[in-house]
Image (cartoon, rainbow, N blue to C red; front, side, top):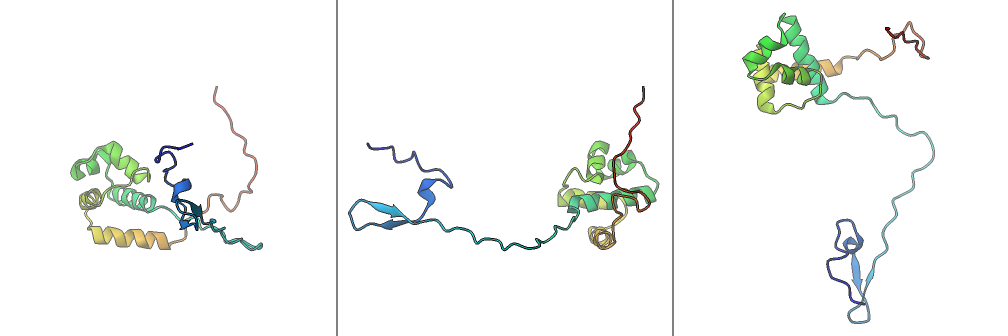
Length: 146
């Protein structure tokens, strides 16, 4: 049975494996795929909970804006963006372009370099933990309003 030549041409599919010429004309054989090395048992590295750049940048924008006593509407108006967009940037929900970062930095009275240095300093500071030191982790009781 002859199959259409494009039936098995799928990225990552059967035809992506390396082939070797066979002794018989017209026949090829597929090289066996390599198996990834086994991980040795033992302690695994603990992933570090690093913030995303957009989150650190957003916190810095909000800190600058609140230090100056400005509202979202005032800062967004000077930067040429909507207050909703600025709010999303400050909350780390949006990843602004370099042009947008420069416009927001200018609206807050700083330069792109100055803003970057501030964010780097912020990233070097220890962050507060999610659980307050005087509270023990455990079940929480929530009150529902009627």
